[in-house]
Length: 411
Image 1: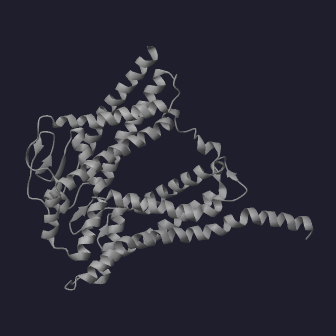
Image 2 (image 1 turned 120 degrees about the horizontal axis):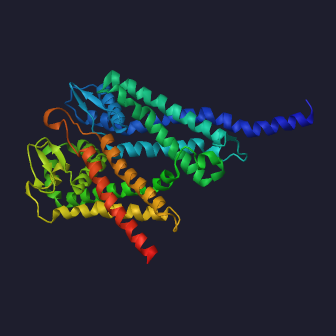
Image 3 (image 1 turned 180 degrees about the vertical axis):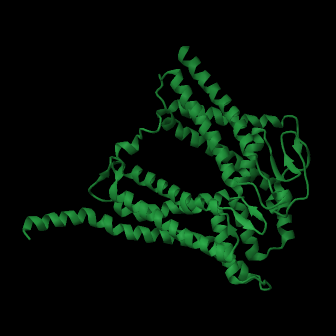
């Protein structure tokens, strides 16, 4: 072998070696991310089993319960006897995606730091794409192991819903990791990825205002829930004491209620939109008042409004989603040129409104609405009605901002 051939071989191994070596590591890292994140649910389940000295349940059943809870947090539905549990803790889902994104970023960091960028079809740096795909495949494989544990020892997941914890969660994590890596080093993405031709220009410009609008609605709903929890903390603490869960059980109960806080925030959003919500069958709250019924012993339910008629001014809370619509309209105007045509501004703002209202409705569908049968079979906010109401209210707010912008330009 000549000196030139040795130099070519050395150059080739420098460019390809790290990429090829990182794929097995990324695959293992993905599997470990799935196995490790599930321990957040499995370990508390085992601790509760250890603390319950009189329990007749085996430790394998507790292991299966932990695996089932992890799958539930990832979006799967569980079967308990003859009933289905479809309430997905949205905070748990967000944590699963966020932790996965962090792990995927670490696994693909070496490929992203390569000195030579090799784009595949003008889309993405090839070693980076391979590393992220390997991480996602490893995560899916690790998730399937917990699916097996759940089927063998715990509450059985509904098969068609397993697509969420096994595929959707790692895909979202990979996309977030990719966005973070590309933001730090833009040359990793080719022009076909930075400006995809299949995505209309209006959607690209409306994407950020729409996501911000949906996030603001959820944030307002969360703030409302926290205020109610503080105001009615005495009732919440009383219910917690009545359950007498002990130290370990009490900690697990608090964490479980924190995990569904975004779900309760959507209830508040639905109330503000005018469509109300239902805690159980027979216990609901709308602008006109609150009805009560026999409630499950959930401490957070102590923060629900007292039964009775509400003040006549309460429907003014609809101004909050209208204000969010104005915010979406303002952010949409900032996403286009100042002297863009009115049609362009209207299209971008309208698309952003649809994305915001649809995003909140999609979250409500993901969060589910069943904790069992009979009176617990359908709880929470009506996703379809809430989405339509938000669409009208956000459109009103955005429309007012567009009219103000038009008046200002023609003045």
